[in-house]
Length: 118
Image (cartoon, rainbow, N blue to C red; front, side, top):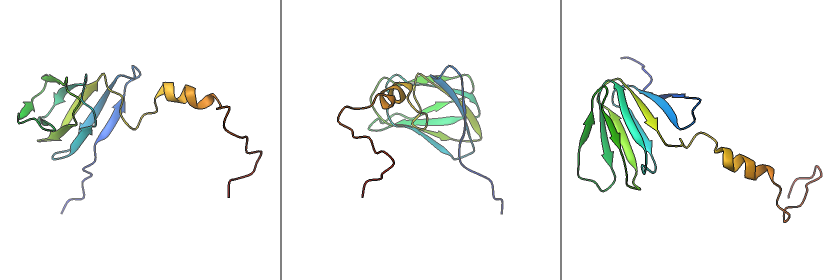
């Protein structure tokens, strides 16, 4: 019995709106909100499903799908595959705008001065 890892591996491009995901066979990658997201199959074959959408969308190498709906998108690898996801912010990456807001201290927040709340 093989102990292969079935979790997707991700490569983030410096352009921040495009990243690559390597999917082992039968792995699933989810995009919570597919509006404006493009998915391109770079290698292998993937099956794309959208919540409440009866279509079956299968992509081979070089084929692309663009979603316009605010729906969850599931990308299932039919075989070992690599996809590019563009114009999306992956949930695991910090949003630069939220980082900037976090640095601005709210006037309603008290300084802790080394004390922790009870």
